Image (cartoon, rainbow, N blue to C red; front, top):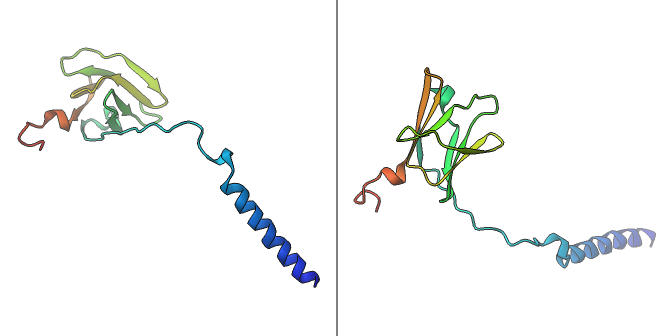
Length: 126
């Protein structure tokens, strides 16, 4: 009989725990999630030391991610203008969706980032 109560006690405790979690408000998010969409359709070329590891856009900004130990050069527009960036960890954020960016490290190293969506002609983007 003692065995029965031990087994029943474990089963009852598990059942109560499951029921408590199912109705627990603390497990539900209190903030409505944002529906973010990222576009990674960028071509990256150039010297490895100057290239970002990943580039994407959210439709408002362009994000360039670099390796943690990588030196980050100047980020320029296709017109050669040095762009202001914000820093978020190892990522640099440029305002706007940039069709083409150039990263330069001194006079020796450079890379180019091209947003494929903006480079496609209307006939090929369908």
